[in-house]
Figure 1 (tube, rainbow, N blue to C red):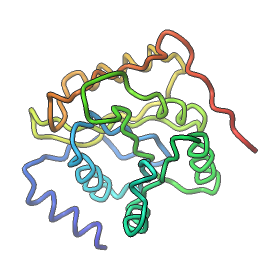
Figure 2: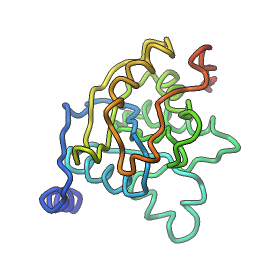
Figure 3: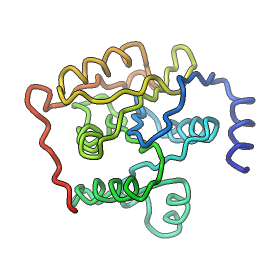
Length: 198
């Protein structure tokens, strides 16, 4: 009830316009891009709550320290230990196998700075878990945000990234100067598979 009320008030008062293709109806890896500001997090929650999409999101372990931990988890956060990222895949797979339906929000841009390539974790998780990818976006030039298409990865890294690049080509993010071109360092080679554990 609170989430629906919050989202209605937010979108009624916000300068942003929510535009969205149909929300995914099964577990999906939901890309949040371009990720250029911490305000992206607020928009992500408002989108998910308005469209009634249960979400989980990945955050660095330090965000869950102390009093923030229960709040972050209540908002759908999953702490990531960068020293053992394979555990995240195991946890996501466990949730899917238990029948939970959610969008796993990832921000492959990483550090909100226009340097380097996207991180390939979203691609590996989608492949390993057999999840489609949903393209979420923020575009300050049009003051619109929402969800684009949902599609299955083909396994051809370059072809899949070409499709993602085409979608984000005209999306500027909240701070356009920090926008990062969608590109994986592994586009010219297969993305290493993450071994699943029974």
